[in-house]
Length: 481
View 1 (tube, helix red, strand yellow):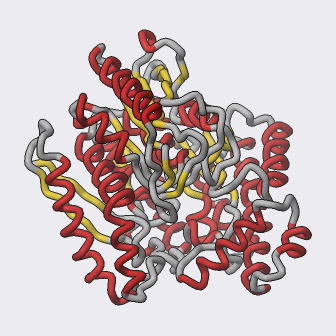
View 2 (cartoon, one colour):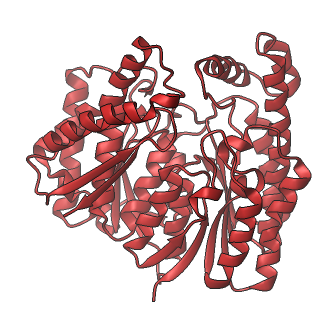
């Protein structure tokens, strides 16, 4: 009989809802999520009362749960960036976990909460301009007073709402630590979303680290970069917790730049890699011979670019030589029957076409155990680890190539350029959603059939939608036939 996990996702997007369900299914674990009608939809918050009722009922039939504090407390990630929910209401919503644990002491609760990012949600061209100004200002200051001082060109209403939400969320993060300390929560992850080396989050993180230390729960709580990958990481941890030993992971990088911080993150890449390996219930090993899995990190060199805003770099001869050597290492690891995962973090928000093309010339990509090149570095790192340590799922592997490389790196820039010419915002396509979906479907299907043409692959059916009315992400579902 399948073991059942109740999932309260960070929001309704595929990375937070569908990915964990599919990952766990191959391991014969059933992940159940609340019905779509009570979840959030873009800027509309979830029905938190409905979520609370669903979770209380689901707990009766589950042996564990993975819970987003942001969904439970505020109605989702985007809702967490506004001050509409009071701190009292947020606390009361979160304390349902305490009630569930008392009623069912044996249930395992894996909780995650997000340390507020440095700006608001960009849901229109106008709000995107505010997002940029606020992100730039928040990255330069250590306290709210200085933010108000240098952010005088940011609309006061937006600034006040951002600050109020930030203060409330910090209190809820402290409460999450308390729940770990008192035994309600078995493991807690606090994700640092869209941050920078300096910024408003620095002081908050110091307070949270001190609170973890003074509460005596260092072995049960982790603060690390990331957000959208955390449900997948915790799903892997839940399943690995049932195993007799931790999988060992060796890590290899394409460059010596592993000590650099990626865009929107405040810690070195190698630190985030180690933290995500540990969070997934695995252990780091240096020798490939001792490893159950090898994680290959396709690194950026001098700086990481964001493909949502920038064009890809053109690699020089030296870079291509190093890339070919890196691809050879991936081939050799698979040749000695090691599970092999790739976190493609040369760019933010999209895969590295030159890297994947180089690897494809010497290796059947469908033989990889995982590939990820979406959103931030930690999103890709955490997802790749979770995917590879669990039983093989070729459909999810293919989806990542289609989404992370085909859509995000190649098709999306063309779509965004087309929309701009037609005066349609990439942040909210509104009533044009079906038309935009149709254009994306045609381009992606053409790309996918060419990309997979020479690989050892069964026929497949590819379904695609925009989960929210914006071009940032797609819901790509591949069914092998």
